[in-house]
Amino acid sequence: MCRNIKTLFNFEPPATDSEIHDASLQFVRKLSGFTIPSKANEAAFERAVEEVAAAARTLMQSMTTTAEPKNREIEAERARARNAVRFGAKPERV
Image 1: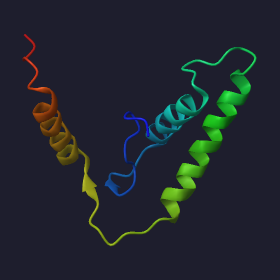
Image 2: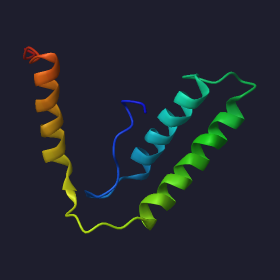
Image 3: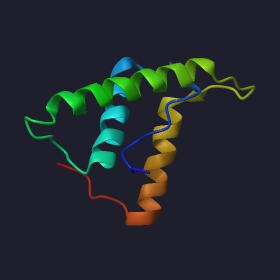
Image 4: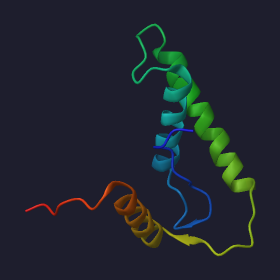
C-alpha cells in the first residue's frame, strides 16, 4: 500500500471529502503507475479517482466499530514520535 494513504476510518472529526479524494488519487496513481496521466488517459484517470472515492465513502459509511473514535491531533503526535525514532529527530527551523 502507498505510504501516503492514511487511515480515514473512525476519526473525530470524520474524514473530509478532500481527504477521501486525496487517498483515492494516491491509490489510482499507484495502480496506474502515473503521477499525471497523459491527455489521452486523463478522463479515464479522473473517472477512476471519482469511482474509488465513491467506493471509499460507501465503505466508511457502512463500517461499524465499538472502539472510541481516534483523535487526529493525538494520532499525528504519535506518528511524529514514531518517525523521530525511525529517522532521527529533525533539526528545528529558525
